[in-house]
Image (cartoon, rainbow, N blue to C red):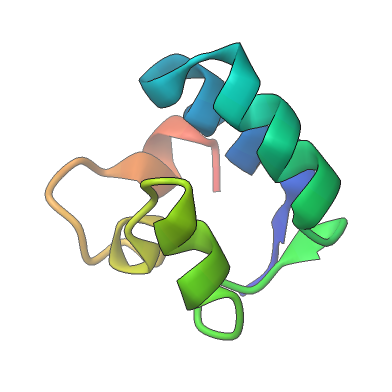
Length: 65
């Protein structure tokens, strides 16, 4: 499953603020694959399992995925 970068940026902005979100915007690809980009997501405090629906926070649902 690939997730649009803007959805990930929105989540990072909510959790960590604008500076981290801006940095993520520069480093993440346009389409983020949670499995392939797990290390990069972790760098920004995102648990890839949350995006895949396996996390407790239902992040995928909140992102409308």
